[in-house]
Image 1 (cartoon, helix red, strand yellow):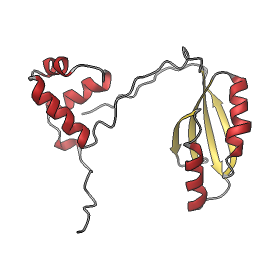
Image 2 (cartoon, helix red, strand yellow):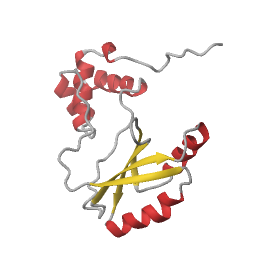
Image 3 (tube, helix red, strand yellow):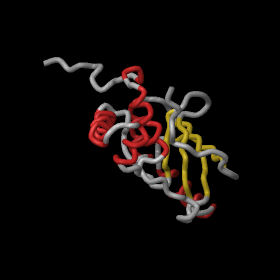
Image 4 (cartoon, one colour):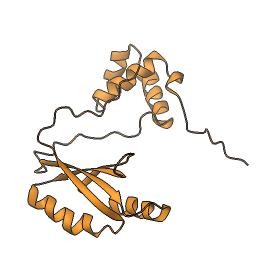
Amino acid sequence: MKSDPLKGKFSVDELDETDIQILKILGNDSSIKTKDLATKVNLSPSPVFERVRRLEEKGYIRKYIALLDAEKLSYGLIVFVSIKLKQHDKSIGHNFVKDIQKLDEVVECYNISGEHDFLLKVYARDMKHFQDFVFNKLGSVSSIGSTQSTFVMSQIKHSFNIKIR
């Protein structure tokens, strides 16, 4: 049996206004109870529960998380680290990705275009912790050619919500 290459790929066009409203509400507060969500979208809880389940199954909702306060947890230093690989080939890129996923300080990693190959978002307790991270963890990733660090002085906007329609 041949697999369908489009399976699992959907478009926002298949969503109705109630689905959009549900996604917007959950994007702002994923801990809302189904009953309260149903009230906000003017439906009973059962159809809202089914809609949310369908949105999860189709991948519009990937997961639910708690947004932790890094500063209160003593991780107040945010650093963006731009990475250039030593060279570009499949195995070096694959090994880099595998190595980066093991580093707890790295909370986000993007493959980017331009002067650098990857952009990491790193949380550290302080400059000493970041220095230790660079020398002892990031420094052990053999596929890295060079790094450039940019330190965040203040966070102006931090959101995970996506504007829908």
